[in-house]
Length: 198
Ligand code: GDP
Image 1 (cartoon, rainbow, N blue to C red):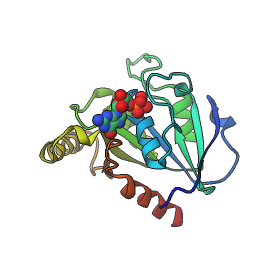
Image 2 (tube, protein in one colour):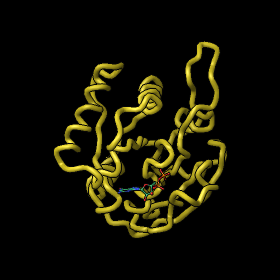
Image 3 (cartoon, rainbow, N blue to C red):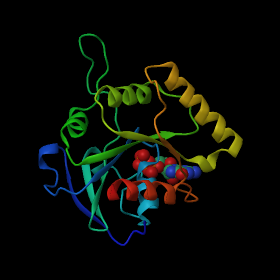
Image 4 (cartoon, rainbow, N blue to C red):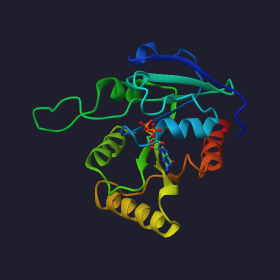
């Protein structure tokens, strides 16, 4: 897919205020600093489309960008814990979970994971939450340029193994990317293109 246009449409903190258009939607989410803004800018080839670290503000909102006039890229805030429930089970910010549960236009969410780190509890819990709620998602490993090919393979395999030892019966679809050298860009856009045409 060639990116012909990428335009910021709106930011808000409530799923009910998201655009009324029925365009297919793809959401990007991950822990703060995972490389989400850099990835969005790399994918769309627009340097300042998503605000990278050091420029806080919009990061706590649901940000809609219209791509090629025919789909929405949604930049979601970094997740964390909103509160601890009675059972001491961690939960995620309500407007994020509301977005995933209520947004009919969502075709696929991309959950970003920094490829350098060991699987983190918060990420595993978030993936589990997505599964429990039957939200369609893929994983995106970011910052692959920081590792050698063999290490990339090892880290991905370790991650997948850990998922399969947990609640997952099948490994989620995943991509390996780098915003520094463009790795994964064509594959990811091709995947979205394919979903859009089906
Ligand atoms: P966000 O908080 O998830 O939006 O993360 P940012 O996109 O702002 O990136 C956080 C930090 O990681 C910044 O210092 C980026 O320059 C760096 N970064 C992001 N993506 C990559 C990548 O693919 N490769 C490398 N080497 N650094 C990256």
